[in-house]
Length: 259
Image (cartoon, rainbow, N blue to C red; front, side, top):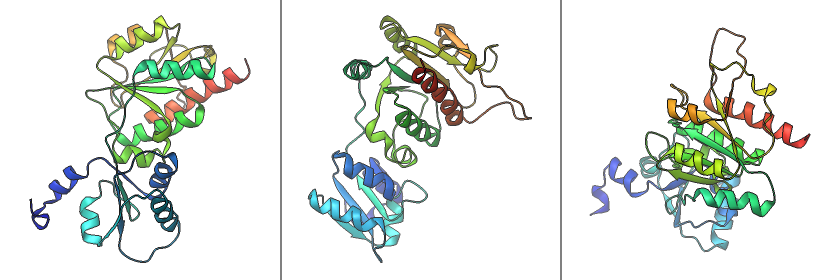
């Protein structure tokens, strides 16, 4: 195909596996992960973009400068900050890779299970929180849920490069696998009676976060060992999924540290 005949859709399909934004690209470069090529928007080079260029040259990664109109066609996020890294598809892991990581660290397994998170911004925020909290891995479904894309990578501020993420056909099968490893399954649900801070969250633990609109599916809820909720004192009766995740995850971190 002649490059001059590309449509906006063609460009997005061609570069759909990409990381955008200065912090995200810097984290990617410093992680040592594979990068096929980096596109830089033409213009004055100020701030961290120069560090990106320097590290990319050290790693012998091809850098191409393109004009603003072409750059905007390629961009998949609202504010790519003048840099796009084209990368191989995200390398999802197996559940047993997550289990093995905890064993290598000689730590109780700490996992997040996302039952249908659809907003890539929420997924990115959750990954960032999980990485900072020492979560060993995240499990997401293959269908009806956000996958790791350029928006997720950017919102995670590069945390996705350090987090093991397993993409599974069936969440309940994943839960049963974890149960065989002695993991307690904690579901989050507004209709339960127990508050998250009154529940023992020490030991091997998986926290299940439901979808933004509907919460956990019925079968997943029934498969949980116990359910917890966050108190709601205002007029609004629900929290953003990533905020809820942070609250419960860090309660577990607190309990594990004072055990």
